[in-house]
Image: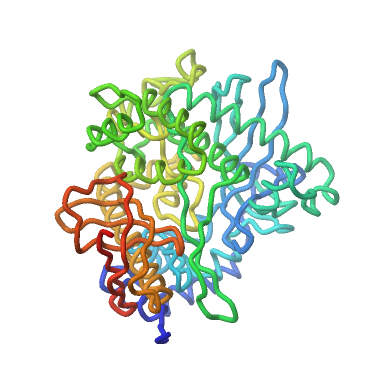
Length: 506
């Protein structure tokens, strides 16, 4: 096969999309100088290092953003604490590192490697919640009732310690009964009980959201596989029980932070997903499987359809999920203006998991259709996403009783830029993945593949094949195809350097 330089393709793609592929010397100097910054101390920072904090992430992840610990309460309730790395403690607003983060707004994950939002001296070291290290964190404490409602929450600063770095695959296999427990379960007292309590709690939170229309989809991402530094395959990286566990806890945390800022009279950055524009196509997709959906977008009805298909066709559910997700569209960031402080203290509406009056006033129309939540602010990954770092600064100011560090107008501009750069980062990731796929398919011209239509627009019709797991464009016979259709396609041409893979309808 013709050699390929994926790294150079990624660099060129980032520059073409307005993303910075490298840190300035000033940013690298600033990150190194942070090693000399003494940790902040004081009575306003609680000492919670003795709690059995742990993390679950990918095997190779070094930028650990959050830890958690839980405690069972009377009546089936649970106290959940989620500690988010205090990145703001070492990344000051307006500095060189902050300017780079504000420009890119996200880490970019390509088949050629990761382009981190923060220098690795910070993201994989000083601001990462590594096992065995004491770190500063912003803690979101929630009381979750037996039915999955978050009845109360608070936010404060603390010193924490990660007692165990666990992995998604290891925890999931153990909980499913297909593998022994991770070694830390035996070496860290109380860790087994913690993980099992987390698993039960995540299920309660998930059931509460699904009862209100949260979509139970099962999408699959692509993982490049290298052997001796050589790309050899693109394989599916499927969801599992431990990934769902962490996702459910983070959704609850992001909701609590949004409501906290609204109750404090602060503006905020919200993540929202409007009702799908292509609901008519989702209705047709459901009808093709013998189920009728209402004419107007209805998350509960859609989830009933998805749940029925998961049971009826487990093997094909990932493809169906992908089709639905494509038709739902992408989430966006938006600024929620400040509401009157205290307009909705923890009361009956909050106990039911509903937005407070302040939250409603500050974020009207900014709900998330796919998650079935009204209050949602990305806050749990400040090493990887700039909106989370902005939210963290707002939270710390609210905790300290200080003025909001960003105005509503500034947040609106940040939201617009973050949405734009997130889209650019996704396009870079897809371009590099296509280059990798084209490289792997060089010797397979003329082969026929099963495919799923993932995009149908004036700019082209795109399909995904499963082996290797990648997308390409249908350049012949695409007439009449729409998202969710299945077909057979024949590989016509590939060009790794130009990142294109062309199919025709077979």
